[in-house]
Image 1 (spheres, one colour):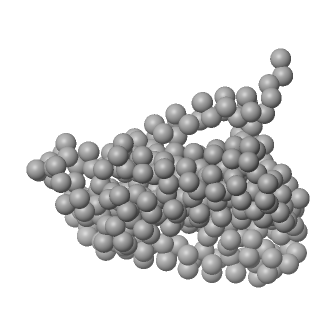
Image 2: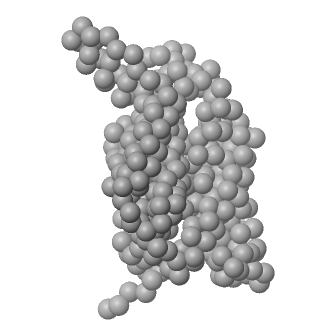
Image 3: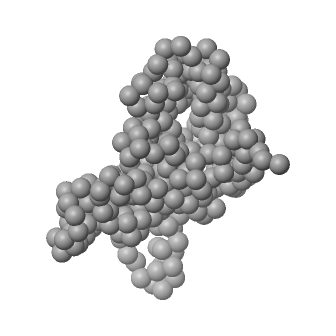
Amino acid sequence: MRLNNLTIRTLTALIGIPIILFLSILGDIYFLLLVLLFSVMSQLEFYRITEIKGAKPQKILGIISGIFIVTSFFHNKIEYQILNFFENQNIYLPFPSQAQLILIIFILTILLILIIELFRNNGSAILNISATLIGIFYISLFMGTLVGIRELFIPGSFPLSRYFDLLEPFANENLKKIYLLGGYTVISIFGIIWICDTMAYFGGMLFGKHKLFERVSPKKTWEGAFMGFIFAIIASLGAKYLLLEYLTLNESLVFGLVIGTVGQIGDLVESLIKRDASLKDSSSIIPGHGGFFDRFDSLLFVSPVLYLYLDFIIFS
């Protein structure tokens, strides 16, 4: 019996979503590896799209650099392991901050890309360099901020005063509760994005009359986008009371506003890139869902905005 696309999408989601949610809650190296999978696969699909347009990106260097950038958001635990190892050998080394580490990776990567392109003589140097760098910045850096969000919920980053019912904030049991809040935050982001996308789809299908951005995505409508926006806000407010107790009502509203607007813009940007290459999907690796780039296009825009909002506004 041949399954229709909606059935295949649903079956894939029933398998994939629990895995994503479980690893998000678990956090640590397991969540890092999950995000690295998303990043590497999305980056490969992006490079494939640029190749259709005639670019010859430096894929191996781009992927390696992307892995380092995503991993740099795991900074605190990497620093602890490295410094602890050397201290046991009675060797004391300075270690760069997270921002310094990312900057070092960027500088070395850009230098290497430019030097390698100098000797490649393979098509347009400007096109090759641009495609390689955009794949690193747009995919890896943006995706890496999701690891950054998960790892904000540790002493020194998370403001313990926000968790008012903890009488002994540095007790092991309470530190585990705080780290768990990071998992709840990530699964809330995933959930709100999925709700927004789903309601935008059904809203457009049921009520869509006015085209949102026909040149980029002919099927999307203002009615669908509005439906997705409203349900993103509703879902975000619901998440505040169900999981994200550390957020105020206004802060949870911002979550919904960001996902309902920036997330849908991210979807349009990915559609623009695919349409330029005359592609419907970035790949067919996920049954019924296309590619990783297709599935996480909204997340690529939402994650860095919410990371900055959490780190520099809420937690500052």
